[in-house]
Amino acid sequence: MQTKSSRPSRRNALVIGTALAVGGARAALAQAQLPDVSRRKLAVNIVNTTGNAALTLQHLIRQQGYFEELGLDPTMLNVADGSKLMGAIISGGSDICAMSGFSQVLPAIEKGARMKLIGTAGQLAVQTIYTTRPNIKTVKDLEGRTVGVGSLGALLHQMMVAILRKKGVDPAKVTFANIGSSADVFRAVVAGTVDAGPGQVDVYDQQEKYKVRSLADGDLWVELPEYTYQGSFTSQRTIDTKREVLARTLAAYLKLYRFISGPNSQEAFVKARLAALGAKDPKAAIAEGEFQWRFIQKNQPYTKVLILSEERVAYMQDLNIRTGVQKSILPYAQVADMSLALEAQKLAG
Image (cartoon, rainbow, N blue to C red; front, side):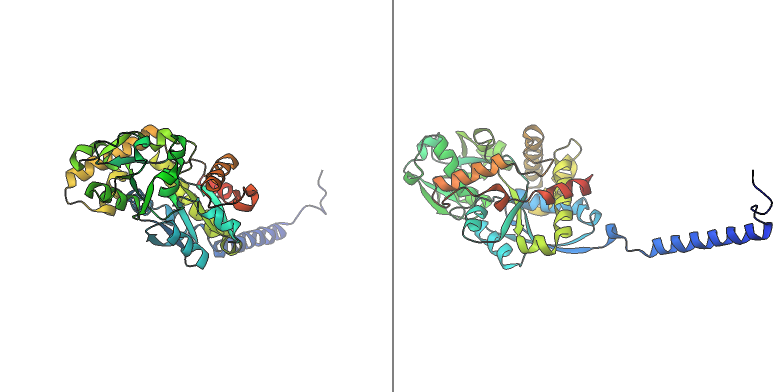
């Protein structure tokens, strides 16, 4: 029971109440004056390739507002092939390559480049092998032929080496021509400049229109499920100095991959593709975009977790060793850091 001496007087109660109110107001004011990290715009320089899919997704991620949602102010750079991607990251001109083939990153690390793989993007290749030559029907028929790719050791070249080896074809019996991006390779195939080459699936259902054919065993998402099509990578310097920026960037892309893999993304995807690539024939462009979206829904090529597993990295290193661009398999911890992907998962929700 409270005694008279311990019971606060009415005056004291008013003083205490006023003090609590003032203190609460001050605390609220102090809280309001704290920087809102979620709204603070952080600059990030992102480099990707110039392929049709990369350009489409680049437009879509902006269109959906995922960068703004994660508090980022991005500057985007697109380059023709993997060697230029590497140059942008190593020089420090770009902070992160968000979605690209990464086989060339591994031998660069072996040679002393302070770089790390920090996530995955496309886990299945969205490419098939096209040709205009009537006597080229399977991968085996590519022996003695000229195949269009990008720079040697980069994504398109490594995919072709992987499928050739899997089908029992010696890559040394194929002449590789450095054409550029997959869009450039497709144009070279259509023009007859090369005998065959990997191209994206946006025109897969319009082969008659372009007078091309896909090889019977050339659908790489079916034939090479173990080949990781795209990853994200950066320099150790950027990890050390811009960790928050990298985690937020990965989170924005994770939101993109989850969105595009879901059933409510068709209209946004087609709109982004038209805006990114333009269209001389809008009707045909819409049909191509719708087909590509359906392909994504059916085959689910994009990651939903960002994590690039040790097994997939080991496969890529083994392929590099077999093609002579890498001498030995490096420890997973030396080439990959998935802690940023885990942070990005939390940010993406």
